[in-house]
Length: 283
Length: 277
Image (cartoon, rainbow over all chains, first blue to last red; front, side, top):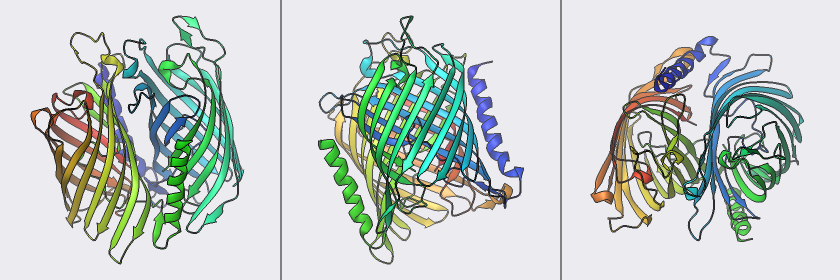
C-alpha cells in the first residue's frame, strides 16, 4: 500500500479514536483534555518529552528541546484510581558554536502514545514510541547521514512512597530498529526531593535524580561494532520552583552529568560524557 | 560562569517578581490567546499535505512565567516561547526523510484590558536543511543549503468584538537577517478568527466551528503575501477550558514558511490535527 495512504489511514484512525473515547463511559468519571498527566514524567530521563535548554560546560555544545505530553482522556472512578490516555512529542537539537552562530549538528524527533494508571503510591505506563534522527546541516559533506528510524513498545512502573522520593523502572523492545541491533532495553532511576520552602507566593525545593539505562544494542560505525556503549547514566542536582506545592507546572534549573552513547541518533556510535547547566520548563 | 550568572539573575528576577502582590506565578492560561490561524504560532500538530506528498510536524508552546495586575481591568504577562517545525517527505515503504526543520525561541510581554490585548515578541528563528536534501541531493531536488538565522520584533494587537469574532494585526521588524539582504525589514501580520457558538458534543464536551484568515506581508523575495485560510472544529471539555483539540482543513498560499526555502512559492491544501495545551 502506498505509504501516504497508510499514514492517511492512521490519521483517520486517530480522528476516530479522539472522537469516540468520551463515549466509553458516563461523563462524571471522565475528563477530556484534563491538563496534567496521571503518570508523572521522569524529570531525570534525558529523553523525556520536556522543554528546556542545556548548555554544556565541558565542551561548546548546546541542546534545545521542545516537547510535552497531552493527556487526551482521563478516567477517574470513585475508588481513587486514575487512568489516562495521551500523546507525546518532542524534538531535540544539538548545536555547536561558531562565534555568534550556532550550527546544527543533529536532531532527534520523538512521537508516541501511552496508556497509564495510578493508584495510591504506584503508577504504571505502557507506551509506543517512534524515534527518528537526522544529521544537522553543518555536517553536510563532513559526515554521511544514515537511516535512523525506530519504534518501540515500553512499560514503566513507578513507586512514590512519599513526597521526598520516587523510584521507577521499566523496559522496552524496539519492534522496528534501523540501524539494526538487539532491540531490548531497560531503565531504572530515582528522584529525591527536599521539603518545600516557601518564597511568599511560590514554593521551591531541591532535587537529585539518577537515571540508568541499559541498551542491548551495539552501535556500528562503517560496519564495525562500537563496544562499551550499552550503559547510559545521568545525574541531576537542581532546584524546582512552582507557584504552589500542588501545581504540576514548574521551572527547574539543574547541573547534570551524562555518560553513555551519544543520545542523538546520527551520532549514536560516539561516546558522550558531559556536564551541563540546564533549565527546564515543565508545563 | 557567565552562563551561570545569567541564569541565576533571571531566576532571581522572577523570584523578586513573584514576591509582589497581585502577581500570579506560572499561571495556567496565557493572557494573550494564541493565534490559531497562524501556522507559525507555537503549537502541537500534525499536518498532511496530500497534493505535495509531504507532512508537517509542529511541537512547541508558550510558557508564561508571570502575570500581574496593575489595576482593576489591566493585566500584564511575561513568558517565553519555543517551537520546532519540520517537513517530512514521503518516499514509500514507511520512509519519511526530513526535508527541513525550523526552530523558534523567543520571549514576549503581553497586556490585556477587557477585550483588547497586545503582545510584543522578540523571536529568534533558525532553519536547517534536512539530511534528505544534503549534497549530493537527488536530481529532482536541487537545494543549496543556506545559513538562515533571523531575529525579529513583533507587535500584535488583538480585539475580541465578541466570543465569535477576533481581529488582530500589527507591525514586525527583522532586527537581524542572515542571509543579509537589502529587502525591507518591516513586515505586517494580520488576521481574523470567526467562531460559531458552542454546542454540546459527546459526553458533555463542547465543540464549535471556526474559520481563520491569516496574512503576513513581507518585503523579502521581491515582496510576498503569505496567506492561510483555515476552517475546522475546536473541541473542548468545558467551554472555559484552555486545552482544546482542533481538526482543520486549510489552504496556504505564499512563499514557503520554512527558512531554507523562503524564496520559493508554496501553495497547498492541508489537513491538520492540532493540540492546544
